[in-house]
Length: 69
Length: 208
Image 1 (tube, helix red, strand yellow):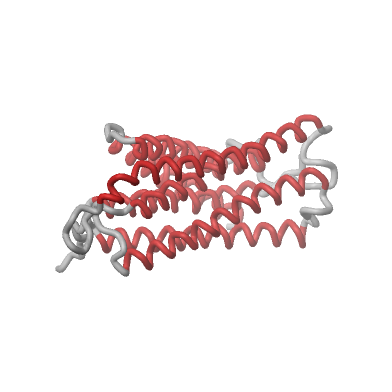
Image 2: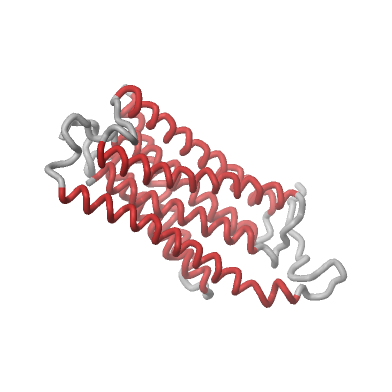
């Protein structure tokens, strides 16, 4: 197994874990009031989206892996 | 088993009186910090839109002679940074719930993951400069944009790691209490901001 495959597997597993954690934290904090908590909710949503993007990149759905243009 | 908890020293001074200054200025500090993040957002946005404009006005991307960036490694490195965002969030949650040891461990994990991301970026820079011969000064718009934006972000991550290390030391020294912890909130906001900026940078440099 080459390094690129290991990196992709790491990105997929990590993406799933971080995505689940981010969306679960967002779900738990959904009703918390206050400016800072609203900012945290936006940040958690974007973090979850980032995790999904990294997951899709790891699955080779987004981007391409070092191929020339 | 003994569980370390955080005292309710609260917004109270040493003499037991309410720390009125903290209570009155907390919202102002929060607004000031959010304004700082907005100004940082404007800074990144200006560079990002300049990059996108230059990219869309050129003839094909990446320019001739430059390979597409390695998405596999960047995806892995991104997950490391996003993971640090999750651990930082739970560090703050544990602080709010009075679990001092869990807070400390989560903060330590965040610092380690932040340092790992920086190491990964250093590895990628090394590969680009010495193996691919892409440089900030000699690879046209692509090199200048890539190294400026990722370098600026890397600098923010480095400053964040320093900030979180200071937070760790201050927390161990008892600077914060369960009700008086704006520094930790600000650290968490900053770290989330750094994560979110990377979502954009990762998307525009590696995926588009």
